Length: 355
Image 1 (cartoon, one colour):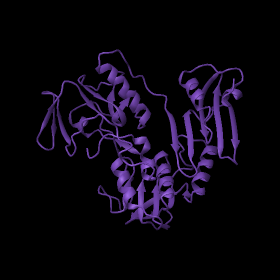
Image 2 (cartoon, one colour):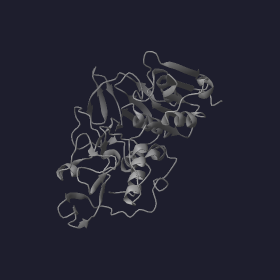
Image 3 (tube, one colour):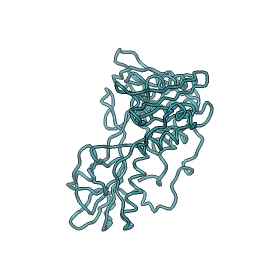
Image 4 (spheres, rainbow, N blue to C red):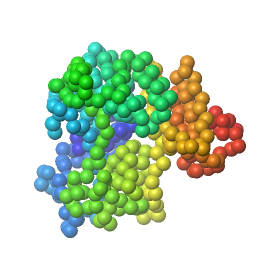
């Protein structure tokens, strides 16, 4: 580990220059920097480190996180070329921040949550940004077509050139080659193509690993003395890769390790993105945003304000929603959805935050 624990949610704000790395640090944690755990000896219950030291344990918690996914592109090997940056950790963020200058030509590959955040932050730093998304729309896992179109307009207004249904073939240094042969000239390239759980240590120790390190409702691995939480953990077949579920898992495990009854039964994930600065961006998405036949959909849009609100109702239950620009009702909607509560008889007023 090269940095103290930090709040990953605020990385884009560090890249945009609004916060320093010290502001997002988490206090009160003892850290051994520059030392890497290389082996778990389950028989003797010790962790071996690369400096030759060992750390004994009675209970071990694996929170090894995830690695940025490196797509199979021509010109991209295990070692990233100079000027090609991942964007997932604080170290990634600081390296990228040091490289960008006003007028820097930057290409961001990937139009998910991290790609959108990185593109916006780079634009606010004065970079000339191109965002290349292979899918049909931005943040397609979280947003419907209408909200994604508003998000695209928001980025375009900040000077970001957005390309969707854009397949990247390879890299030529920092330049990006598209499948049709077109070259996007770039001084730096950002890879925001998702992540893969970091499971090597657990796998070498013989723990049950599928997509992530498999855990039960007490966040125990196949070894009852070893727990796993966060991006590296797989619970009920789900690897979340988000800050919210990781915090819920950490809270549940802290209760359990303190001798209090607790269980982690999964997270109903609400994606929330709040970015400040010129042209602030607020969006939230939860549950099923694509309706099934028979579902009721209530949507309100105000293109002049860049605001959009939509909920999907199944029977008397709220099953999903998207809000962009105006989040005044997100708290009430999220509580209703998370609690699986019946909706009032006038769901339109509920959407508006009324009674």
